[in-house]
Image (cartoon, rainbow, N blue to C red):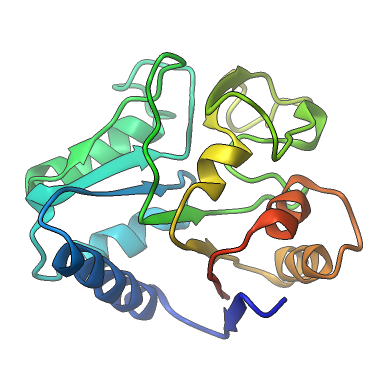
Length: 206
């Protein structure tokens, strides 16, 4: 896929530098707010901490969780709560996902991926579609991950694809293999459906 760039062996600081450069470009290109979506899980938060050390106008950044567990924001499993703790002291706005929220186009959609090929909370059992008329959906993973046995709320594939660029951070050989198989259509996991429909630049850090 000509729109996909894989960058090998990058540490958190290098990914944060790349993100800061992309956000700086987006902030310079417009006087208005810049909206991005970011994932939850363990991988993004050290990168976000390094990103926030950069000198950018954080007051113009609007951050959407790509998905969240359906729990109160002060719950330890809440992505939104953790994102607020990081971004809001810097001046950025963090949005709460609700099914009634109007989803804007994103300057960047940053995604993680599970070993089952799920992205955001679009698990294989939910049969996510690139032509879904919804932009946000509430769903139940099956099986429920034992470390987070909660219903989810998630951006849909059309919402994620309405972005200027896509970013993946993939850790580990198993996930790397699944991602590379998705690029050549060797399976029909959600990540393969997304990549098959993506026209914008896709950057994957490993």
